[in-house]
Image (cartoon, rainbow over all chains, first blue to last red; front, side):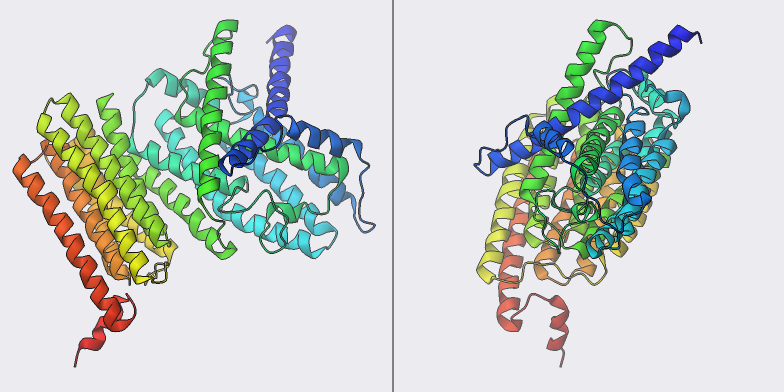
Length: 316
Length: 215
């Protein structure tokens, strides 16, 4: 590979990461807005997500006197892991910028590193909320991660590759063929996305009620730019999961060649599909009541069951 | 294309059966049954359209009207009237039930390969899903305490049988279909009355209390 090719590849990677990072707050606001409309409220303006981030970034970071370097590093590692994970997923083009680095295993591992860093940082100051939130978040993650792996492996089994770029290209080449295990894995993955992004049956992103919060409790002590990093990384992770679901189960429309026309079609298709998923999430959030914490493992075990079954049916 | 719709509907029915196993809220379980029946109706209508069998449209319409609308409405009304506690109390915990159901589905799918029809293609998946749902329905029936959930389990079994009848043999004669439909609605009505009586007598829908009737 010549230097120019390498530069182009790096440019594409930066472009994809920056684009997703810029689009992520919009997704969050869109879901908030649609939820508000369902409740006959006006909802926040479209740019609210960006205003929030700008507000947090302009403040000075307030840190506990007992905080060590772990506390400072937590949000940074979390953010870096989320950005790194986006480079492994094909978005507009049926190829991921850092495809050569690894596939599904690296993706799940990278996200786990970020989660670990944040949980350790929450424990660092010794505040009860941070510890409680970290323990809850880890409980759910420990159940959701194997289910996520199984769902992703079901698709990988169909394509015969663990690499997401190869996987999507294979799916496109095979054309639309449907197997029951796709439906099961899709349902399983949707439940995992709800659990991992802290949506309503599992966690309520809109409140700071002591007894119920999970993710919010973990990051309760952060303020200013630290919190901005956590917030934007969380939004990015949500967009990343939705993109992953779109890639694996409805890849139609994604660009196979890097021509401007194909990219534009890919952009429109991607945005449309993400919007439809946002509608589905809004409906799921609006029609369900939050589960008691002890019932959450039951919900996640449903997705584990579905994922396991999806994998089993592939062989039958 | 047709095959994709059929498999999508069948797989959707299997997913709703799973969610029924996992769900503890009684009303949501009933709604899930409604969704399952709706998917069955879509499946029947798809087969009717592609194999140009107009009677199947009647079957599909009856299925949707009866099982997706009327029966869920009736069951919800019964629950409202009785005013019972709206949580399902299973004998087995949810993760354990799910594990059992995964095993049952694997058995159902494995058995479906034994049929001469079921060895390949869409029929394989339709029979597999139907057998799995049959098992899951029977499993639900023995592990749930409330009489209403047992009705739902029976209806799930009925949906499974219907799925095979419509999906694999492209439908029974219309007279039989209508007869079955009326049987189902009669069964639900009778069971509804029976539940009423059980609640009146024991002030609970817990069928495990029926053992007290023994002398």
